[in-house]
Image (cartoon, rainbow, N blue to C red; front, side, top):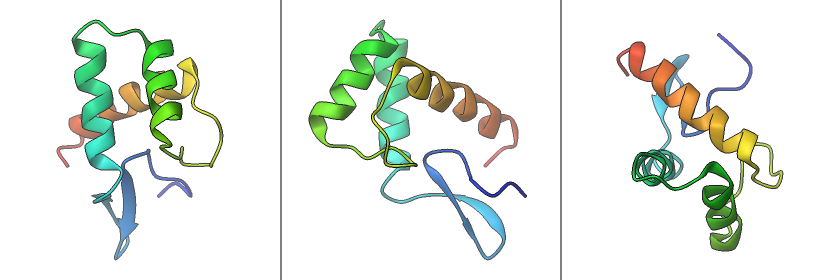
Length: 79
């Protein structure tokens, strides 16, 4: 078990679960990326919308990329 779950998830009773407020944002990030939106523009959208990152830092291309990659990884774990 890692100390920080992927964005959109949390540990509940020791198990990795979908976070009720963050997980819909993950889905929106994925949908925007699949429709051709750049990671930079997604980061800008998140900032303008006032969405907080996991560590309360400013969203960036890399943080969006991490969400996309981790979503793929957690999907492989069949959450």
